[in-house]
Image (cartoon, rainbow, N blue to C red; front, top):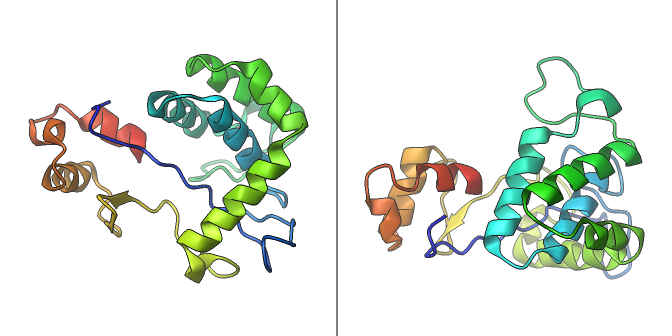
Length: 185
C-alpha cells in the first residue's frame, strides 16, 4: 500500500435519536446492535497502522462470516447472514491473525469496552453524515479522496485517476496501485 495513502474507515452506525442517549444501534446489513461492526471496531482499536486495518477489513469482507456458523442465502451479493457469537468470534480471530493483531485485545474489547466504541462511532457518523444519521439509505460504501466525495466512480480506473489527481504518485504509475485500491474499496 502506498505510503501516501491515509486510509480512514468510518463505521456506518446510527441511532433513531440522539446518539448521546440512544444506544439502540443500527448498521447496514446487520442484526440490531451491530454485532459485526462491534468486532471490526474492536479490531481497529487493537490495530496500530492503516496497513493492519486494511488487512483486517479485507479479510473480514472476503470471509463474509457465513460458512458453517451462519445462514446466508445462496447467491447473496452482500453478507445477509444471521450471526451467532461463536461464528463472529472465529472470523474475527482469523482476520486478526491475518492482520497480525493481538486477538486477546480484540476479544477483551468485545467483552468490555465495545459500547464506548459503538457510541463514539455513532456520534462520528452523525457528525460526518447528518443526512444519513437516523433514517434512509446508509449510502455505503462511501469513498472520499482528498476530502472529495467521488460518488459512484468506484471502479479501479476511476479510483486510480482520483488518487493520481490528488497527488498520490504511486497511483500515476501504470498498474502499481491496483491491488491497494481494491483493498481500500
